[in-house]
Image 1 (cartoon, rainbow, N blue to C red):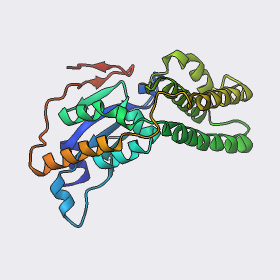
Image 2 (spheres, helix red, strand yellow):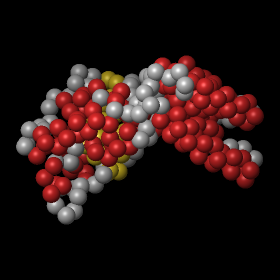
Image 3 (cartoon, rainbow, N blue to C red):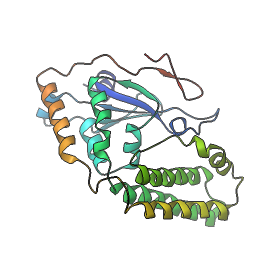
Image 4 (cartoon, rainbow, N blue to C red):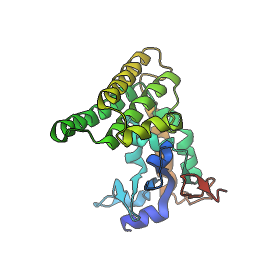
Length: 250
């Protein structure tokens, strides 16, 4: 079984990410697709194991095998957690729906460390570009701001919200380079400080519910080994329109 066949035949969940999921899409935005597939359990009985992730087959498409996806989500990886909360779901069979119902188990106060660490790596790139070229990469600046705002709101509410339509115009102005860098940098610092202040009173637990996630993974592996993990009807299927919304959903 080739990697592409794994994605084609065993995907349990797929969604659209990037600017379309964040409410920041423009007419030139790409459609970034992310997915989760379950490699059949018998493939793990061989010396050569199934891939942990697959890039493609379509352009801007990337998928993770379920176990790898869960591992990264338990570590509060921002890119992975955001996949679970995308408002643009293209496919979710019975196993995929159970994964979505489980998404709260992955959340913990660890998001402060991982989200801010990722944002700081973006900030270093911004500073390097600023020194070398006299201006930052404005697209990276928007990504950093969005991530810090999402982290702050997640710590405050316990819910991860991807859509940033409320800040759309201001964020797009940053992307176009219309705001002076000192003003953008001050916005970043303020969002980071607000996220840090939200940690002590956050409704999120200190640690994710690893036991609950592991129970789900073991049940999926067992069902696959027994031939009981069959593709089922998708509750959420739809093509993504040019505006980033779903059409033809059923």
